[in-house]
Image (cartoon, rainbow, N blue to C red; front, side):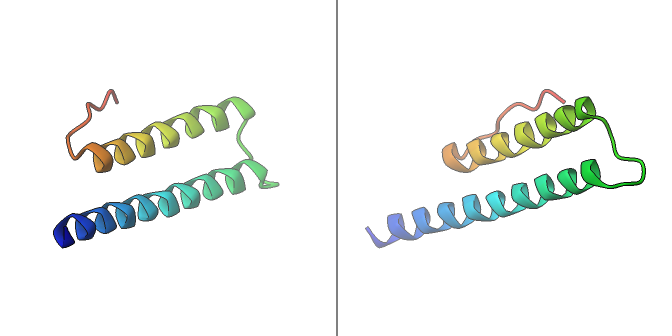
Length: 73
């Protein structure tokens, strides 16, 4: 039982770390989009957001199921 709880705690810690990393990536993208000099377009922002979301969703899935998830990139 203790081993299972420790394993779950480690999994939650990894998920939390991944969420913080995702939040940081999203913040960086938003700052790049909002900057006054040479901001990128809404379309480019959406494409970059899609890539970040996909990357982090795959990482979260790997943590949950403990297996490799195919990368389509």
